[in-house]
Image (tube, rainbow, N blue to C red; front, top):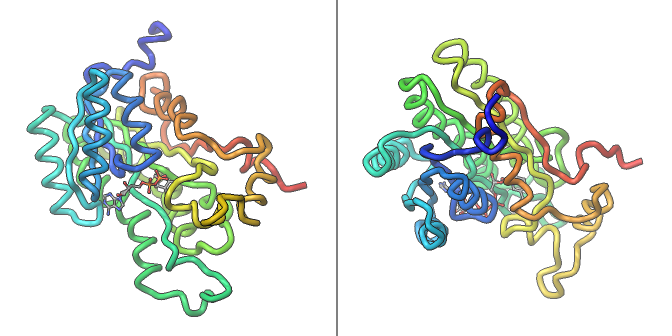
Length: 275
Ligand SMILES: NC(=O)c1ccc[n+]([C@@H]2O[C@H](COP(=O)([O-])OP(=O)(O)OC[C@H]3O[C@@H](n4cnc5c(N)ncnc54)[C@H](O)[C@@H]3O)[C@@H](O)[C@H]2O)c1
């Protein structure tokens, strides 16, 4: 058996992370770099990815920021070329780009029946098609190499939908299904050394959900924010660095025989019936 520390070591691995300029994946990128990986930070917002890359480099790690749109295959292909030119190979993919949008959220002013199609499509595509397209482009590399690890980012909405956010919930449910599908497909058709898993984060206060969970002016919890805390046995929102341990486990040899699973990191939210 490998030594405990070696089991979680990512030295020499190259990781591509989408949405890496964001709160959750920026935190994961920093952790992967600390574990020894060279990280390529892909984001539509290049300045956000660059900031994370600068922090990693200042800390002695290896990172590059790459402008990329996960909804455009040519943009993903160009990013892949750039990562390979810089780091020579690709071992890990984290599909982190995603999020909800106010315009795709029901409210007293915006009933379900009037939700605009473009907003619904935007949210569904960003969260599902963005992961599928990125997995096609970088998964092909893994299939050609006969090894690799993909980590998708799901959500509590995937198990049971939350109110108000139909497109986001449906897209994250599709992520769970796709995680299982791709895990099986890679093993059956390409290599038993390609693993595909997902993390389902509970509630982390970030830019995409702040408007739903806290009042804009006072910063106090909204009724929805309070309900979430009441339904989280640990009684609080999560901190992004609390996702790191699970990510490192799934991305390292410590999870060598784990594929096709979705792991909740949620302070007990998904276990609690509410009674
Ligand atoms: N915050 C939470 O509580 C929570 C809970 C469950 C799941 N998640 C999921 O975690 C992931 C990260 O969320 P976050 O809270 O860090 O969000 P965030 O908004 O901080 O980060 C998302 C990043 O994705 C980038 N992005 C958006 N569209 C893109 C595109 N087309 N191509 C490339 N990059 C694009 C954004 O520029 C941003 O930097 C998302 O998939 C989200 O759905 C978040």
